[in-house]
Image (cartoon, rainbow, N blue to C red; front, side, top):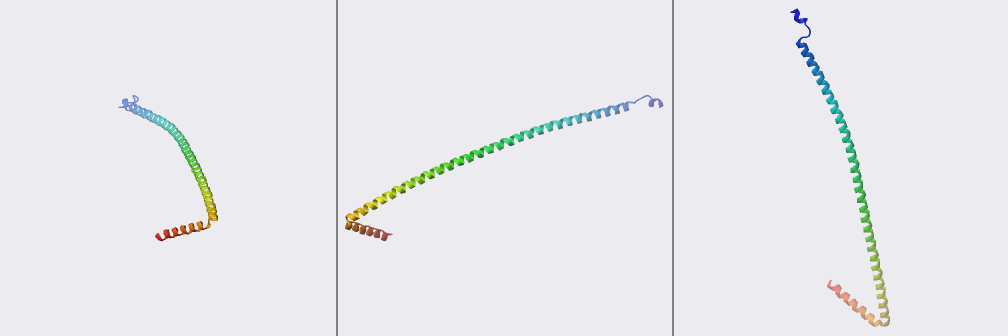
Length: 139
């Protein structure tokens, strides 16, 4: 039996060394693969962050332009409304001026008629008063 012990490494020792070597190589391969995966994931994450930042800037520009366009449209509409209101007010003032002038002309004509024919003017006033009274009774 002593002869078997002194002959050198046995098959079991050789097998143990082979398994230990395989495990060591496996650990190194897994470690290298994990390191590569982490590096790749880090690079992908940085690229994603950059893309998201670019997207954020693009959306901010789009919203800003849309807001500017909306404000511009609102200013244009306000200007158009203001112009229309001014035109309407001017036309109303012109109509009022013309109506005032016509009323003055009518009053002047009635004064001239009543100076030339006072009895006719008095008869006309009585007739108008009677008509107004009759219309008031119907209501």
